[in-house]
Amino acid sequence: MKNDQKGWFAVSVKVKTAATEAIEFAFNTLDSLGTEINDMPKSDLDSVTVIGYFQDVPEKDMLRLELDKALAVYGLPADSIVAVTTAEVQNDDWLAEWKKHWKPTHIGRFIIAAPWHEVDNPEKIVIRIEPNMAFGTGTHETTQLCLTAIDESYKPGQSFLDVGTGTGILAIAAAALNSKFKISDFKFSACDTDEDSIKIARENSEFNGIGNIEFFVGPITKDTPQFDFVCANLTADVIIPILPLLIEKTRENLVMSGILAEQEESILNALPQRLAGKHLVSHSGEWISVTIRMG
Image (tube, rainbow, N blue to C red; front, side, top):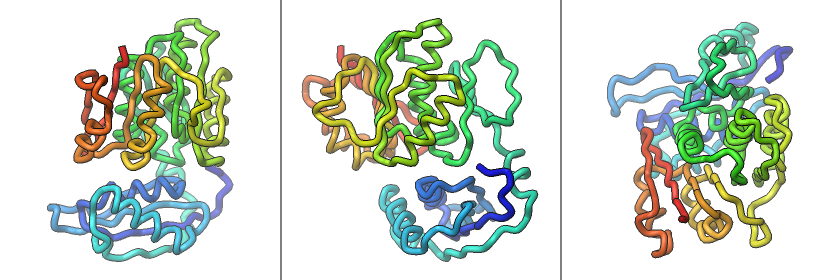
């Protein structure tokens, strides 16, 4: 996020209350600088305005496409959106004000903090992430579910693969555990089909002093080697087609999230019979994670 930015663009989407999180999902997909919610509703029948802030005006067709895709992911009708408006934000104090409301996130042994936060807790592992994408900064339930699974199940020294790495936060968190236990020889890879995400992930890794992660652009394939611990924080429609490959590439633990609670049955039905009863489902809000233990 650039401190010399003179102005920003605000996209305001007035929606039915049930679609609030879906709109935030779309804004994060579009790499918003941040989001906020105005006119908090009193009931599910009311409407709410979700505002996303951007350095550049989002292209109109792409904005509508991502909004519609997000509604589909959440199983919501297109008419959940009441109105969409875009305006330039000239207030130079907006960024400073927004930063005041961004608080560190505590998950198990991890604290996810922005570069400007002062964190004095030597017992915790502090991971610094520039908060320009909420789905990779520890604030979203799916990220928190994956970080909890890493905190509880990852053993330092295990090899680690992060599929759909985004900002790199999951790979960085696991790598930081190795650093805490003075383990320097570990095999870590992280991939994403979005080239910009890999660039951001590399920058975040370097900022946190982590140099052992191999980042690459693209999906996992038959040629991808096996790893002890695999994380895939994607969406159910992406996970299910590659589930056999994710299982094949996992030696011990496979953690999957980006899955809505109502999609749990679809994911579990896609598991091979040999893994029946070897899964753990964790819930946070409307989202779940599924951890599969191969042993």
